[in-house]
Every structure is written in C-alpha cells, then in structure tokens.
Image 1: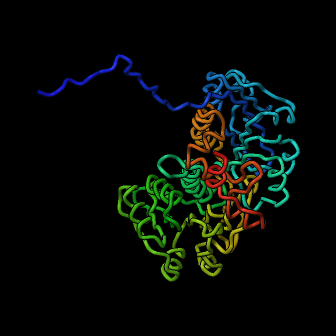
Image 2: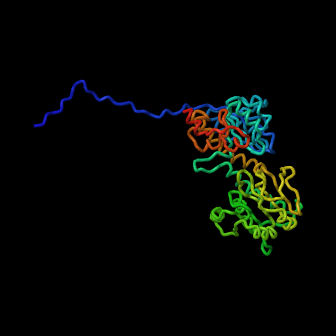
Image 3: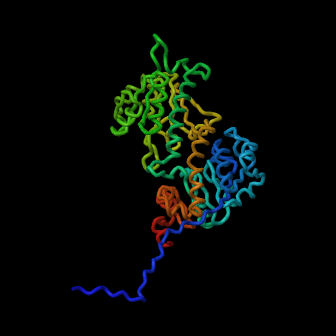
Length: 403
C-alpha cells in the first residue's frame, strides 16, 4: 500500500506576476509646416484634411502664412482644420518637428533648433558639406521622405510621384503637339481614318508604366524600351495588353526614334546618375516638331541634348525637336501631389505619437530607418558620408548601442 503524499500546511500556491510589455507613453507633437521659397515648389506636405486628423488627436500644428497657396490650400482652410497660422518664420521653426515638401535650404539652417526632427526630400546635387555639418552640430534627426519604405518594402512617396510624372509626361507631350503651343498640330490619340501619334518610352519602371497607361488610354501607338525583361513583362501585365517592347539596342532605338512623335525618358538612375541612352545624332534624326519629355532630368537626363528647364520656361528647341526638361514635374499638379505626400506622412506622424516620439518609431520600423540620413550628430547615409568625406555610422548599430 503506497503512502499518501504529505502536504505541509506551510506550502502554498503563490501566483507569479504576469510580465506585460510596457508600451511607450503617447507623445503630443508640435508640427511646423513652412512656406517653400525654393525649387519652384508648389506642393505642401500636409493637407488641411490631414492637419484636422492630427489636431483632433491632440497635436499642435503651425502653418506658415500662405504655405499652401501653391496647391490652392489657403490659410482659412488650415485654420478651420485647427492649425495655427504663423506669420513669423522664426516662430514656426520652434516646432519640434518640421515637415517640408522641398529640400532644406541654407537660409533655414540658422532657424533650425537643436534636436529637431526634419522630414523633407533631399536633392544630392544641391547638398553642401557645410549644410550637413551644421545639421550634425545641432544634433538634428533628418529623414528623407523619398527614402521611407512601407511595410511592403516599397517607397510610397516615390511611387506616387512617379505615377504623377508618368501621366503628366504624356499629357504635357499632347499639349506641345498642338498648334496652340507651336506644335505640329497632331492629336495624340488619332481619330477614325487618321493613324494615332507614335509614343516611344525609354524605361519600364513606374514612370514608364503610367506613361504607357496614359498613352494607350488616349489611343496612341506605344513602344517601350528597357534593358530589364522582367520590368517589360511586368509593365505589360499591369497594363493588361500586349504592346511593342524591346531591350535598349541603339540601332533599333534610333530607327524607332526617327518615326516617333513623342519620346519619354523615364530611365532609373545608376549610382545616382541617369545613363545617357539617346545621342545627339539620334535626336537630330527625329521628326521636326516631335516632343521629348525627359522625366529623368532631375538625375541628369537620358537624352544627350537635354538641359534643365523650369515651369516658367519649360521648353526649348534643338534640331527642331521640342524638349521639355522640368525636374519637379509633380509640382505642376501640386494639389494631387500634396494629397499623395500627405497620405503617407499623416499616418507616420500618428505612429510617431503612439511610439512616444520619432526615436521610438525609428527603433520599431525598419522602413523609417531607411530614410534617416542624420541621427543626433551622426551621418547614417553611406552615399552622403562618402560624397562629403564624413564619418559614416550604421544606424542599426547606433541604436543597438543606445538600447
């Protein structure tokens, strides 16, 4: 017969405390939106609708006087959304987070406060070593919004701006083919009994896809060149119809350019610079009155005859071919572009608040870390560090050492 287990009266079951994750304390943000004065910038980074969402969640938003007028958003729209309209630029820059739709310019450096967060695009050709050093000295966290990745691993702002650029390129070309702008008087899509205009697109990325989509939608004849078979296949699948595609072979490209009415340059840059694919000789053999739209011009352009133009003087003629080489195409449809940028940045600002500040969100989200090029005095972007011969610090290692 087995013995019964003896249970001491001093023995007791004590429940262990459950360890729960301590969530960061929600932070109230103070966001400043300045008026852009450079780069022909008409966009604004947050629309009144986005500002209304942030203000209703308890955040303070200051908007500089007339900051949104380039996109037909007025001070009254922002004040009704709950923003504070600021007339003194220095006062606006007291905000803890500055959100810009154009790159930082030298005049703003003296206004920036230590330990501020700045979200803006960066244009490498306009960056200077002194600017980076001043931002480092002020220990600013600087994020390039075009380098921010979403959870799917794509660049949402770049994609939106590329979609706009692709569609705008074709609509612009259609405009310059008409007599109103001293064009040949060709209707891009053609009509019954009259063949459509021939559109040639170099590059099958997002810009090329939306240029092809708009061209085919208008009824034009479209031919696409790219050295990536995968991109050409993807473009055809996304458009949902078969169209002429080819790898970039100089002989075939020259033949097709000679008969094209519109040529769109939409190549991706290699190491920050777009390769020149179309030579001056190829352009000289194009039809008089044809139109070149070089969307790649902000990274050098892929036509040898291209040079940067502006929204005020957008075109020039070379060999009787109209060249449209405006770098910031999206700024020409600034209201649409502003909404696209705002759709990405407004949810990010909500996440910043929920994570207790930008540092918390940078720790938590790899996609946001991808956009950080300066972090509290350290250069965390390798190309920028190399360009200006500055010390590069890996952000992941930096954050690991701080945690």
